[in-house]
Amino acid sequence: MKKAKVLFISQEIMPFLEATEVGKIARHLPQGTQERGKEIRTFMPRFGVVNERRNQLHEVIRLSGMNLIIDDNDHPLIIKVASIQSARMQVYFIDNEEYFQRKMVFRDAKEKYFKDNEDRMVFFCRGVLETVKKLGWPPDVIHCHGWMTSLIPFFVKTSYKEDPLFKNSRVVYSSYLQDMDESFSPNLSKKIKMEGMGSDDMKLFKDPTMANLHLAAMKMSDGIIKGSAEKHTAIDNYLKKCNKPMLAHQPFNEEGSDSYLDSVNEFYDELMEEEPAYAD
Image (cartoon, rainbow, N blue to C red; front, side, top):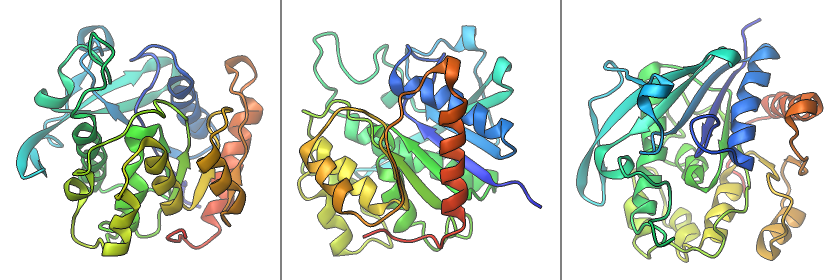
């Protein structure tokens, strides 16, 4: 019996960035999934605050060298990799000099949101999918963590839906309610437009607030995990009425993580028994 393949995509992973709710889960869930007999691949952005020497990052030449067009401009895609020895897992990093060299993550020294965060998000999401294609590694489950991964469900269910690597993938989106007061530019829909996307699909991004970005990701996913305990009216209302598999929020505790890891892996198993679907 072949091992199930789970692709983890996260905007943060410990120990490469400071410990957050997202970073802790994205660090321990892949390890726990691997220990439960599944094959894994894990991706995050190579933010400038990630210390390459300390974490022993090195470029994967065979995967680098591609250019991605974002807003009519070419951006070189660089892939790096590092190992978390204690977890026996590798992490792939999506890098680009323009987007990921600055020594901050999402905000500048004055706590202002970077204006190009949406471009960085588009580049990261497309970069992950193109790299997985180069690896020739068809994931059974794609689990997305954090708003920066929120375009993955949309891309997989539109432009990439006929790709042999992704057409049978079940997409899971964990909704962590971070930066909920932020919005993106009206040009976001233009920046993400690719072949295989219809006008109805693009309506999801007509009003690109952070809440609507999460909603679009959930609508395009096969399953949803409530990542944050916080309440949000629009998101909570959607979760109440949507007719798709959902896992309620569970606090993550590293010391007693087995029940959490078991619940999520059982959720993956249940999803894999169902036909992948474009959600609503």
